[in-house]
Image 1 (spheres, rainbow, N blue to C red):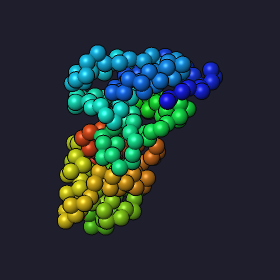
Image 2 (cartoon, rainbow, N blue to C red; image 1 turned 90 degrees about the vertical axis):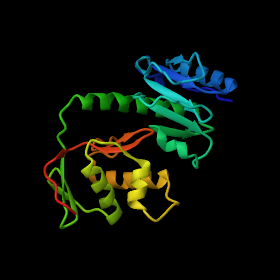
Image 3 (cartoon, rainbow, N blue to C red; image 1 turned 60 degrees about the horizontal axis):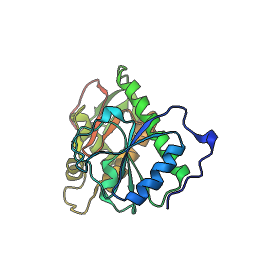
Image 4 (cartoon, rainbow, N blue to C red; image 1 turned 60 degrees about the vertical axis):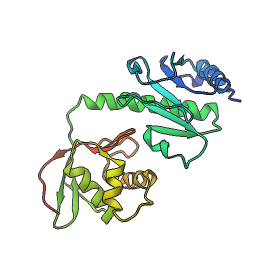
Length: 231
């Protein structure tokens, strides 16, 4: 049972639209009541096949683990709800949350994702100012002319993104590059190395702007390349 204990002073300032894609009707009712009490506008798809979502109408999609989104061009943030951390789908979306979840935690996650999305939309209209290049001889990465000392795998990962600057590199491509002889590597391993790399090169690791996540596809480097040297 999902019940709400949200106080009035915890309501978000703006009324925003959340699309619920949930297969459990009982859970959906409880969830809808809780989010409505927090002044969100709750929407539900009219059909089960979510191949064409009018994403312009929503600020966030709340997706249950038993549901699937088939569209590949969704730009609004997706918060994925699941029962276990071992679910490989958790890295396909912008964020995930484990059940059971309290209303307070869910609302904090929702608000954080929506704020992050709005901030990213503003950043996209600005000129990219972060520059980077690789000193192949010294095996050093420079971000805004500052050297960054990476581990061998972090360097290999950055180099892969670097030579494909602006292009999406899939999880599979990263695994094949970092662990060519290891068939046991997973999306979780990739996510951990992306995070460790971001901690070293991003100005704000909580809001990465140099290595961008493309949910369901992979990652891409977005930076001004000053020059390249072969490793």
